[in-house]
Amino acid sequence: MMKKTLVIIIVLQIFFICSLLSANNLSPIGYWKTIDDETGKVKSVVQVWEENNKLHGKIVKLFRKPDEDQNPVCAKGSGKLTGKPMLGATIMRNLKKDGEWWDNGKITDPKKGKTYHCKIRVIDDGKKLQVRGYIKAIIKIGRSQIWLRTDKPKFGVKHP
Picture 1 (cartoon, rainbow, N blue to C red):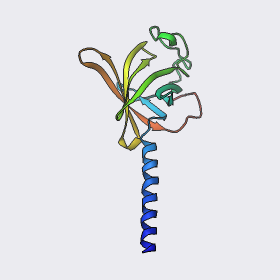
Picture 2: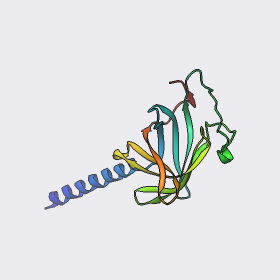
Picture 3: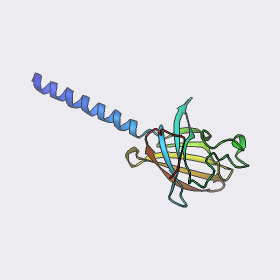
Picture 4: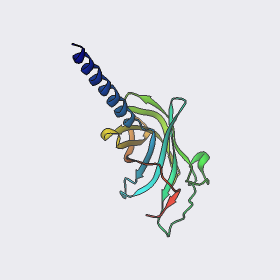
């Protein structure tokens, strides 16, 4: 009887530890490679963090071609980011947890100088982040990107 109880306790502990590890993978907090939905190429790495129960994201690495500006600035229309370096720019802000989504935030496209409403959710067992930028109208008109989980980058700008 004692062995049976011990086995049940061990199995429950293993289940509990596995569920904690799985929940950690489902968090959007971490580093994400951004993929251009028009070209399919990696553009940057964005670090997502939580502060005061809201998610934010900033560009921590850029992937630039040798003939491109290696230190680009945010385009006119990017609000407080206009004219500031893209590297280090907080482009995603104030997303609040809403079920499986983080919603009601904003995301700025620093290249085009446009800011959109934003919502995100972790998919594919924590390996991908679905990012949806949209304009609030009668219906939510916008587009989605899939970002890929990655490790913390070692450098700020890298050539492809």
